Structures are given as structure tokens and as C-alpha cells.
Length: 392
Image (cartoon, rainbow, N blue to C red):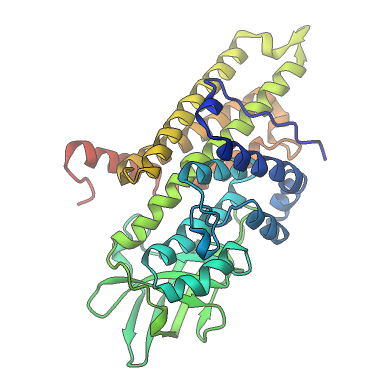
């Protein structure tokens, strides 16, 4: 295994805008990725397995609910710290970042924001330490970009609810201890429910044969007359806006995470171009390779500025759904284009597991689709600037 020699590009001196706490948090995550993720991730991606032994380390670097208050087991950090952690983890692998992002934004966030204090006390401290792992059930076999069409439903049975339906493309589901599931009541109103592993009729079959996010565990959620205690209903918010609020938080994390993947591809390509000699000199000395590298660092810098400003807005409670959509769409698109250009700089070596680029490229094909497709985010921006929805 080659040593992880990654050096983060910072062409516009963004470090000067970060607090000492931001840099400490980021550097701790960066060193952990170099030590615990980089040496094993290619092997696990080839095997299509999630390295469950890293869960404890993810918790220790604050990757699970970093912005959740300390009283509930979180680190009490700000949104820029959360973004920086996601950036560093995705620099290691998008699938590992998915695990942390789901736990933080799609499980801990709704329990904190929409749950009762009893639910917060029961679940959040265990989720923060990784003792419990969670997943988020929104997407269904027939409803992805149109989640409001969901058919998963629950009925009031007096002393409990009866849940039926299915969810698909669920990160963490094969090993999750709890699932935050979105379903319609008898009036058609969407609510969140906490479903626990071991409840009769609840199963989580794993999805196999993925070419992307191979080091992430993906599966289904199946509900066959599952009895849900009434105290497991999230009381704080109902309607489609509840799960979409969670997705705002997760998409924000992705906007930062994609930068990490792009940075890794750029750093790998730059290092290789300086070392690879053709026609008597390093290929970094040729105009076309310099064009590729110069465009990469320009796009990364633009994405860094976009994410940083969005983080400031998030800290102030001013970031809109449309602003988050813009950053998610732009930054993932940026990362996938950089991965493709970086692969070309490496030539044939770019497709091998000796380098991270092809793995990043395959992973980003999922990231550009999940939590709002590339096209859907474009239409969210379109609706925001025109006042006219293209969805109906």
C-alpha cells in the first residue's frame, strides 16, 4: 500500500478565513482518513464491503452529528466544521462520507429537530458514539424525485401504529439499528417514525452488484405489518417539508464532501504529472496537461468559496433550500468532471486500484444522482429565480 501523500490545495488562502477550531477539526479528520481509511479503502471497494471497524473512529472525530448540542451527545460545532469534516471524509471515499452524512443529517438531525425530548435523550447519545447506527427511509421503488407520491403508510391501531410499505436505495440499511422512516397516515399526511431493528415484520435486504459506492452498505427497508409504538412518532413536524428539511442538511454536507473527492483527484493527477516523463520531460510541462490542471484548481477554488459562503449562511440560519441545491449540484458536477480529467492525465494507470481516481469517479456517479438528481437541482434553481415550478 502506497503512503497517503495528499496535500490539500488552497489556492485562495481559504485557511485564513477559518477559525482555529475549524482547522483543528479539519486536521483531525484529515489525519484520521490518512491513517484509517486510505490504507484499506481500495481493498474494501474491490470486495464491495463497508469497513464497519471504522465506525468507532468516525464517532471519535465528531463525524456523527457534529452540530448536535453537547447535551445530546453531539460536539456542538458549527456548520462550517460539519462541512470540513465531510470534505475530509469524502476525500477518503464518498461511501464512507455517505455513512457519516446519513447518520448526522438524516437520522440525528430529524430526531433532534422534530423529535420529543424523550426521543432525543434515548437515541442521540448512542447515535453520536456509533453505538447505534441509523438510516433514512424516503425513496421508494416507484418514487424517487417525487417523494410526495410515496405509498408507504401507517394506520392507527389504538395502542400502536401498523406500518406497511418499502423503501429503496437506503444507505446504512443492512447494518442500521434504527431507521427514520417517512410514511403517510390514513389522511395522507406524511409523518416520520422511528423503526427499530428487531421489530417483527421489519427487514433490510442488502443491494448487491453496485459499480458505485462499493465500500458503502446499501439496501432496502421492508415493512410488513410492523407494529410501531406510538412514542416512536416524530411529533415536531409533518408534511413533505419535514424530510426535505433533512435533505437540506445532507445536501449541504455533500456540497463540501464533493470538494474532498475533487481535491484528491487533483492532487493525485498533479503529483503524477510531475513524475511521469514522456518525450524527455515530465508531462506536467506540456500545455494540454497544464490546461487540465489549471482548470481543475480553478473549479475547486470556486467550489470552496461557494461552500464556505453557504456555511456562513447556514450558521446564520439564512441558507435557503435553493442555495443549498445550487451548491450540491455545482460542486458534485465539478468533482465528477475533475475525476474524468484526472483519469486522462494518468492514462491507463488511472483505471487501476493503485490510484483513487477511478473509485472516486464511480462513486460520484451516485452522488450526482442521490439526494436530488443533477437535473432536479437545476429545476429547483429555475423555480426559485422565475417563480414558476417546472415540476407540475
